[in-house]
Length: 156
Image (cartoon, rainbow, N blue to C red; front, side, top):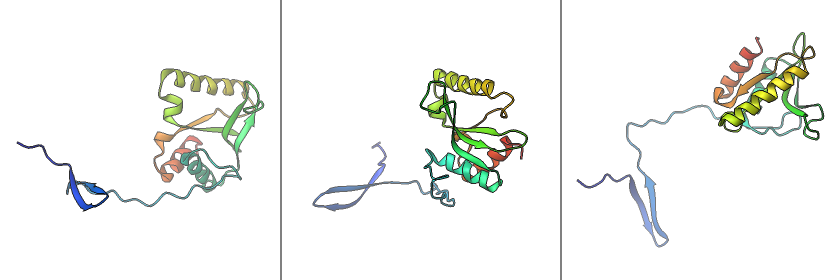
């Protein structure tokens, strides 16, 4: 029996053969609303769409925040950190980190370093801020999921 063809020839031209992949007739396309265009947050361009979606969620929750808040010297000094969102909540502010699974938890070493950074920050800010909140990109595939996750993690 000959193998199944997975491509069909669309047309022939003098430049070569154009090939179009076949799609199974039972495969249906999932339609969704287009994601919002990513724009700067407080004049800083976010590093990911998830950061932008969390900013939209914070605006929707009517919470004041600072994007890319630098503590202990930020990236200039050893031990300094840049917090994605410094959210002004009652009674103390809440630091929020938007973490990418691949860059922060794909290996055991990355996961250990991420946990160590959070524990270090929590120890240094004890009594001055709430416990840091971590939002993973795999937990928010859409802007609405980002809103729900942010609201749940901030107990709103």
